[in-house]
Image: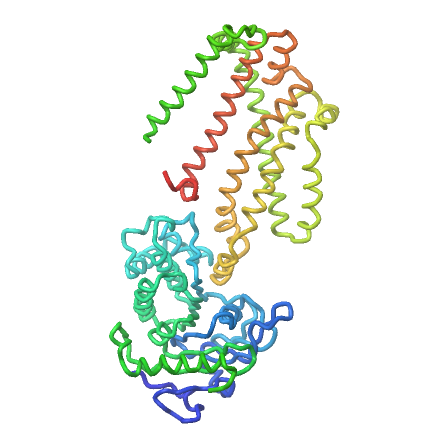
Length: 287
Length: 253
C-alpha cells in the first residue's frame, strides 16, 4: 500500500484518515510549491458566462489524478487551462514550478475522440508528436513499435485509422501521448466514446501503460469506478458553478489493481465517497 | 460486380447507342450535315488526325498552364486568407463578387489585353479554374479540427510544421476535388479563348468546321475534346488512388 502523502491529507479535518477529503481551497503555499500541477483559484468565463469558477487543487509528481464531476461543470476547460491552451479569466496554474502562460511544451493530451490523422498509419500516428516537435521519426521508431506492441496493436502498425475499431484507435492515441515521455499527461474523457466493456478493458490497459513510467497524469472522467480504479487521488468538481470548492479524495488502494479490487470493501467505500461528494456538489452544499 | 463485368456492361450500352445512332439517324431522315453518323465522324477524325493532334495539343497546353496558374494562385490566396484573419474579411467579398462576373463576357477584353496568342487563352482558363480551387483550399487548409491543432501545439509544433504535417495533408483531398471541377472549367476557358480569336486549338477547329458547315469536322473535334477531358479526369482519379488511399471515398476499394 502506498504511504499517503502528507501535503493534502494533513489539512483535512480528521487528520490522516484512511479516507481523506481535503478542501483544496485551504491548501498551503508549501503544498503548491512541491506539486507537479497546482491550480489556484482558477476561473474562466466565455463571453461573460462562467464556465469554471474558483477551482483549486493540486497534483503531486508521478501521481495519477482523476477529475470527476457532472457534465457541464467545466472539466475540459480546466484541463485546457492547465495545458495553456485556454487563458484563464482569473487565477493561475503552475506546472512543474512554472506559471503556465503559453501552451505547455512536451505535455501530452488524449482527447475523447482519438484525433488520429487519417493520412497516417498507426505507426505514423504514434510518431506524429515526435515529428511535430522536430525530432527524427526514425530515431523513435523502435520505441514506437515497443509501445504499439504493449498496447496490443502488433500487426496493425501499417494499418490506417479507419481500419481499426474505436478502442484500438484510442490505444493508438495513448501510445502517441506516451511516446513523447510527457512532463504532464492530460486525458480528457479518453474512454467516453467507447462501449462499456471496451471501456473497462481500456482502463486496465491504461493502468498498465501508465505504470511503466508513472508520468504525472490528469484524467478527466465522469465514471466513478474508472476514477477509483486508476487514480492516486480524485478531484471532485462541484456541479454548480461557484457554490463550493473542489474536493480531493485520496485513493490508497494497492497497485497494480485488477478487476477483483472492484469487489473490495474499501474500493466500494471510496466510490461511495466520490459519489457523495458529487451529489453534494449538485445540492450546492459542502458535505 | 467484377470490374470486367462492369466494363463489359458499359461497352455494351455504348455499342447499342452507337448502333442506334448509326442506323437510326438515316432512317429518321436526319441529314448528315445536321447529325453525321458515327462511322463518318470516325473517318473524319482519322483523316484529320494530324490536325486534331496538333490543335488538341495546343488546347492541352493552354488548359494545363491555366490550371497550374489557378492552382498556384488559388492555394496562395487561400493561405493568405487562412493565416491572416483581416485579409479574410477584406478578400472574401471581393473574390465572391468577382466570381459572380460571367468570365465569358470579358473574353474579348482579354484579347485586347493579351493578344490572340496563347496568353489570352491561358488567362481565360485561369480565371475560370481559380475560384473553385481557392474556395476548396480555404476549407482544406483552414478548417482543421481544433483538437489536432491543440495536439500539435502541445507537442511543440511550429506554424511551419503544422502547415507541412497537418494542413497540407488535410487540404489534399479538397484540392483534388477542386481540380475535378477546375479541369473541365479550364478546358472551357481555353476553348472559349480559341473561339474568340487566334488560329490554333481545338476550339478554332470547331469554329472552322462551323464556318465551312463541315459538321463531321465539328464532331471529330468534339471527339478530341472528349478524349482530352476523359484523360484529364482519369489522371486526377489515378493521382487520388495512388496518393490519397486513406480518404473516405477511396476506402471501399
